[in-house]
Length: 188
Image (cartoon, rainbow, N blue to C red):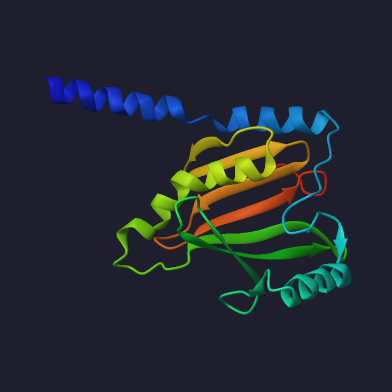
């Protein structure tokens, strides 16, 4: 009987810990109405950069040894630590809309990932990544939303939305989106 009560309690806690997509839409609308513009992203990059400006900036920080080519040579990679001396590979590349960077598709994965490194899997990384990004950006906390396509973690501050979700055992996919340039669409 105690086991059943514990299981029921665990399920209730899990369900209560997840927000609904209607809560997320309300938050996004409230943040957009605030008029706050958060264009700053990471490593000196920002929303609204022109294509040439983006490439020039990445070339500059590459020469400084801050970034290198990404894992598939179709992105830029920045390596940082998670706070417990585990290195994280952060790959990113923008989607250009009207020659401007208004959305970035990114991935995060432990640098030393291997199928046999059980403490370097994406399900461990998702436990620390929201906290890392909250330190980088401040503002609102991440909201955990369960949908038909799995669990997503959203952080919305003004126009800047960050969407995290586990892709596979190795990677967490992230989208940094300027909500003033893209319609609200929570594909969860």
